[in-house]
Image (cartoon, rainbow, N blue to C red):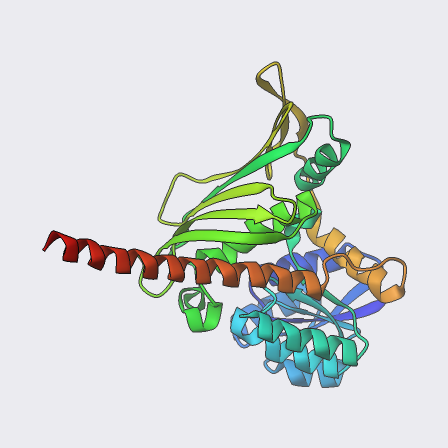
Length: 332
């Protein structure tokens, strides 16, 4: 049995602790959290040793692996320290603030011979597994393009303030929610993105709250992603267009495939256990049963796409500005 320490006591920490409790291979032994009320409540419920300092927690309890669920800007420091202590890592997404930090984490994991899994949870939803299977079976023909729509109220009163500070979060809805969209499509089609054009909205000061993204995979499959966080009508739908039909995927609802111009449901969502499956993948990597798929290298690839999205938006805005001035000069 492997002992687990959890760093951070937010909502996702509870998901991990419940998953650990359901698995015979793991035992949660300690939690590090600055907020006393969160720390005490989770420690009592799951029988943990509670700490305010994660470094002290690791040194005193010597966990085999740690789960890092901290604000994004704290990922690198916690991951580096944990790896140096010989702890295997489950690092919540996004892996880090930028690809340079990702590289530092990868180096530390390799130098200390620890396994690293990045928590891109989309890999473990049955709907996405179904979609991947349909694409691989080629029954709908060639994949022509993909439309992804993800609308949700991002600027809620209960969202922790650090999410709205780009120095802590690394960005707004693209960094946090867009990472799921990018990961899901990249994983389902089994191809990295190689081209990006983006147009982001900064109606909320400091971070982007919506965006339209046009991407292209390595083989040239075009992908459009629409994301909005300005109190929209909630929607989470991915549609795949093939030469012989279409497929629609909705997490928590199911998968539909077209027949004679109408959608027919081929999978109805039931109770998934994505956090358990994620931990099983990490345990298999640690014990040598199977290699980890959700690696740090993969996690870095998502950050690189996000960096390209921000860069594309800034470059496009610069071009539009220069054209605007040129137009005014011509009018004068």
